[in-house]
Length: 186
Image (cartoon, rainbow, N blue to C red):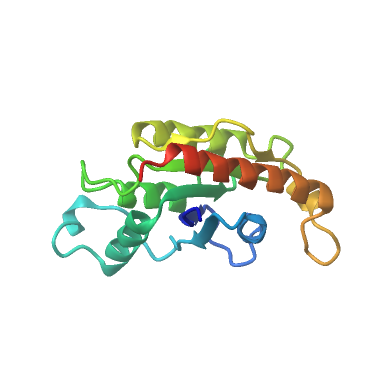
């Protein structure tokens, strides 16, 4: 029997009803049995400040770092804010990668999916995030690239992901499962 890999899912939008959160939940439903997707909340993280980090770091920092450390891989599901990564997600990356040399992300397989009401599907956020992940030594899935543009049209009248989008998400999560299996060093 193959190992079940825990995947920390970081959603860039803080809204409870965000489209990106819905995409994350859909991916969790579609994930093959080899993956257990777990959303790791980022909204309670104080802005990263080295002055408050260390032995008496905020409890939210400690909780977040422990959840990242326990994960076998990382999945980022994000909107685009001003052609880049939302501030809350960038802050989470800073918290998870500090103190310097103690990143909880290093060496893990990862993937990025961006969704936006705009036509280019969060392309800027997706690529800015990938740039940070290179430095953080996260082995990021290259294909399929995942930019979900005009995302509102991907939901039916009941708020469920339509079949076309669901088929793409199934391909994405199945490919990510193989990536995790072949990339993660156990």
